[in-house]
Each structure stands twice: as structure tokens, then as C-alpha cells.
Image 1: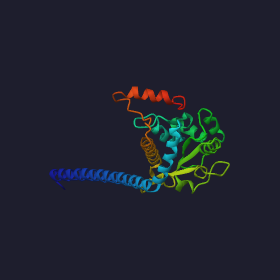
Image 2: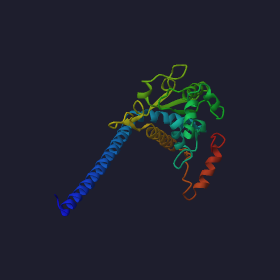
Image 3: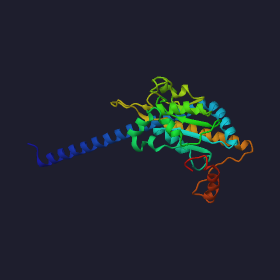
Length: 277
């Protein structure tokens, strides 16, 4: 029979092995997490490069058109539902941004009630109800954001704005949209209606990273790419206005000296046109 000392040594050995095993599992898990994060970094870096390579020329041409409108006291309208609304919200009333941006921020289509927002985004006729609350004028530009581009509200918004004489821009996922059918009675998808299309360069389903044992992919990109495209567009518009000798209506940070006073003048100038100022 083993002695007490031998039993104790055996027990200590088992405990040490258990501790080492758990440490190894944690390190392996941590390494796997780092690998997933690295994969997401790579996806985003490739996405930014692809947007630069494929969308820059369109952004530059579009910026000229919007600058023409802003020079005539026009505003830039931005609409998106669900997560797409964040692209308009990011561009609205912020430091370094233009005061002439009218973000159409409809709470009913935001994720404060995701089930309701999904139903309403697919509801025929709802876009017309929303548009009644905004001053949309012929000759101005509206950017409509929808990753899939297949639901009723963004499609009907595009149709109605074109009828009113606005220039309609879509930010959408062409790879996804071309592989799915429209939910609208016209059979059209957003990219088939818009005057110009900016591709967010995403993939079918938006998310890009696969994990072993998980059916769904993770790592969505449409918000990242949409915000980037919109901010590139705003930067280009601002540069064009400046090059024409026109002082761009750019907000200062309200948390910097003189910010409040500077911004109040811009708000006063545009509050009649921009609903949420």
C-alpha cells in the first residue's frame, strides 16, 4: 500500500496537472479570441481599401453636386431605418460636420423597439407619412441608406423623392442586394431606383467572420462602411466649398472655447430647414 507521503505527493501532482490544464485552456481561449479580433481587423482594413479603390470617384462627383446645392442654400437630407439610421445620426450636428445636414431621425424606425421598427420598415405607404414632416425641395440631394435595399420604406422614399425632383443617392450593399428579391410591390431594389449608388462593399448577410461550430457569421460591416462613406462625402463637400471661396458651415465642438457661440449662429441659419436643430 502507498504511504501517506506517497499519497500526498500523488494528490499534489494531480492538483498541479489540473491547474496547468486550466491555465492552458484559458491561454488557448485567449489566443482564439485574439485570432478572431485579428480577423475582424483584417476585414475592416480590406473593406476600407476596397471603398477607397472603388467608391472614391463616385464620392468626388457626388460631392460636387451637393456643394452646388449647398452653395444655393440647399441642405443635404439623410435617411436610414434600423441600424442604417446611425449613419445619418453620426453626420448630424457634430464637431467637424456640416450644419446643412438634415438627418431624418425617425424614432419609430430605430432600434428602441426593434420588432416595431422591422414591421414599419416593410409597411407600404409609411414613407409618405414620414416625408410629410420634412422640407424636401427639388434640386436638393437625399442619401438613403439601406444595407439590403429591399424593404418598402427606403424604396418608397426613393420613388417619392425622385418624383419631387430630388437627386437620390443610395448607400447599399450591392453584393447582398443583387442576390435577394425586393419586398416591395414594384419588384425594385433601392440600387435600381437611385440616381447614383455608393456600394458599402459588404457581403451577403453583412457579417463576414465564420467561427467553427457556429452557424451564423459575426463581424458586421455595414455601419462601419456607411459612416466612413458619409464622412468622406462630407469632407469632400467641405473641401470643395472652401476651394470656391465659400465658408463651409462647419460646427465646432461645443466643449471647446467659443464653440457654443459659433454653433448658435449656424443653428439660427439652418433651423428652418433642418428639423432637429
